Length: 383
Image: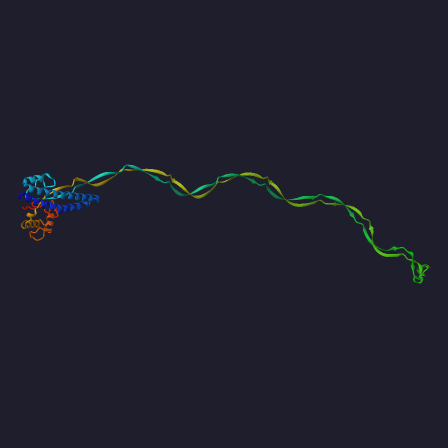
């Protein structure tokens, strides 16, 4: 029963350490691991820890029931040891007087570098656009041609005396000549006529008289002839005719005379050109096929080398952490340059921190609230 009590105390210490320190150790390991992992990995690990803690609590209850049953039935320590060695939730081959802590060893990973194909070999068709340039160019505006041109006749002006009217004759009348003569011209011949009135009024011109029934006297009067002096032209020489020679008439005229007749000639009209600014094709559009080599990328991935597992570690039992033993541990850690506190033999946070610092620097197991036996052994201490 002494063995059972000792083992039970160690087991209780181990279980308590597992419920507190181990979970903390795993949390620390998980944080260190998750710093390089994804959030999904963190969540997965936390779920795993929660599941294991629930399972552990269930096993603790089973353990307590087993211990109670063993005490009631009077089983010896060998039977208890055999029972515990069968269940993987108990330390394998436990030694009486030793304490164990069950810790969750996180999965271990290694970083592998691998060259992976990102894109296969292909080719890219690149269109090279046509290239143009602006140049000054002489262009044909109008083609060369010919035209028939009339060569006008050539004239010259000459002076020429021309006969206007030939020589001729004409009968010219020689007018009569006249002379002016004055003569008495009988206007009316002498006559007699009856006139009223006394004879005395007619004097000697009365030839005869007669009395009418009325008493009037009618006289036959002689009316002498009347003459008038007139001036008149009389022919001195009668008109005659004569033949007059009319000389020929000439006129000096200027006239255009034909020197050469009109002709035609073929005239060449030269081509017409103009300088214009044109956009000229220098290089036609083309395509260029550019091979694109396969692209590879070097990726770094974490490969799990070991699955996470629960491991039993031998730790310093609380009963062994006596003041002399703790003082020896503090001096050893001080000699190793890990502890600078007082040598008071009290296991406190500073002593645990120094022990863990020593363990990490030497690749030994660590725990936030326990000291692994490997640390004590590496410091050549005997608790």
